Amino acid sequence: MKRRRVILIIVTVLLLGGFAFNLSRPKEPSYEGRTLTEWVSKYKNDCYEKKISPRYGFDSPQMTNSVSAIRAIGTNGYRSS
Image 1: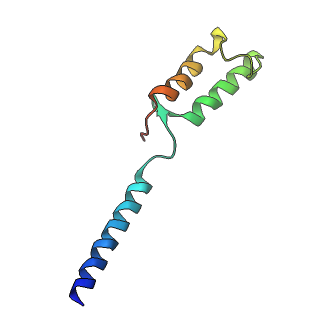
Image 2 (image 1 turned 45 degrees about the vertical axis):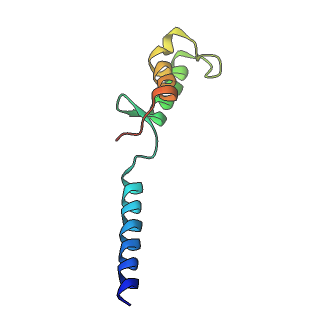
Image 3 (image 1 turned 90 degrees about the vertical axis):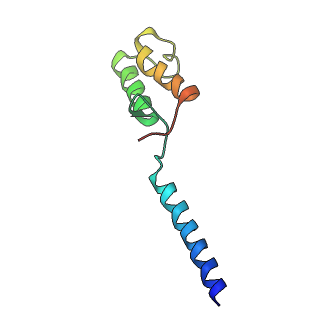
């Protein structure tokens, strides 16, 4: 009986620890304090303001800030809050 209780306590602690760890992690990668969603939104807004098609404006010189951030997230993105 005592052995079952110890095993149950250990399993419970491990499950709660895994659950807490999963909740504490951010949901998407970020770069320079902005999430990927924010960078993509900025890119789309810049395309709209400059009347550049998002499909063809990716290499446009006006989009260097958001494009370089999106590319960096692809290679150097990390999960941070």
